[in-house]
Image 1: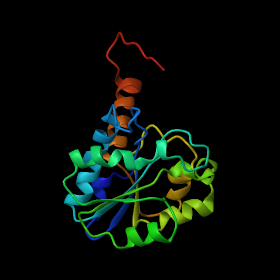
Image 2: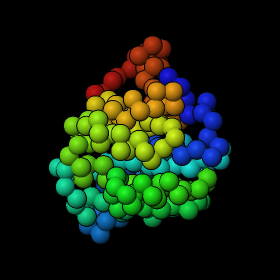
Image 3: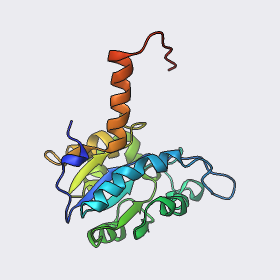
Length: 194
């Protein structure tokens, strides 16, 4: 597994699968921003190395249809608390407008794509949908530990379009290291809750 720290990022767009499936209150405010905060080291690394970041995530279970209550736009204000950069939002994760936004992204800028699950093809792992998502980046980074096991378009399928340019993010790497500690070198006694 190659880590994002091994990637040449200057002038490149990193398509990053993050997990921004965060809880919201009735007004659409993020009530627990831990998942967003944990993605920041990877985003900051990309930006500090002269790259730009195109972030994609799901939120909730909209069943393949757009639902404003599950729009990732609601996470922008929280993301802005932690990332000192220009942050843009595409109201779709595919389509001409979204592709134009990612193509025009400059080093040091961030683009957040709309909820992947507004498209039923995401959960189906659809190859054509994944190919469209791949247009957003020069390299692919998976930093969504909670979704990495799913055979969805934005995780397993999209990676095939980056045969020599796919990387694990810093959060994903940290979670794997923690799992290896427990599985291979746990302090005894210990309790595992699954």
